Amino acid sequence: MLSALLVACGGDPATPKDRVGSLIDSMEQAVEAGSATDAAGLLHPQYRDATHPDRAAASRSLSNYLRRHRGIHLITGLTSVDVAPEGTSAQAVVYVAMSGVVAGSIDALAGLRADFYRFELDVALNGGDWRILHSRWRRTDVSEWRAALAAPSY
Image 1 (tube, rainbow, N blue to C red):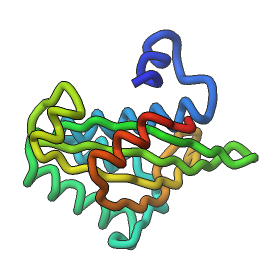
Image 2: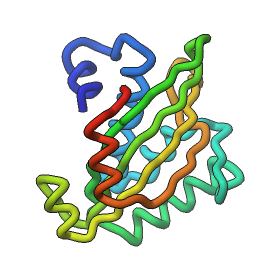
Image 3: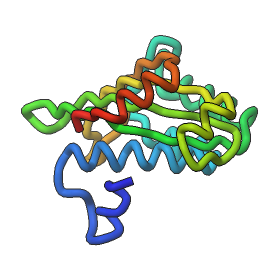
């Protein structure tokens, strides 16, 4: 949420790492708002992953998921951002806790049987904006989630 604060206090975040953080914050806000359109807008036009051959397929899946799961609440933790030397692409690792109800803490999420994920994202500039180009994810558990957030390299 630091990147959201930076934007509120005076424009775009200054560094590429901060701008990647802002992208993650924007995705979190779009998903929690149930806006597949806003979330899909954060995907790079060349987006693809292991189950989606292109951005359109990923957008359809996202829309269907958000329609089936109303009231998604997330706690995200950006644990690393590695920006390429040319400054136009980066790799990021994000841990996400997902629940159907608002929880004030990780302990509360664990008690609610929240789902925990680790996302590896490739992001790239597109027309001056950072967009998600590729993603890989896997389920994790609350102990890995806590350990990763306790020692971020970001």
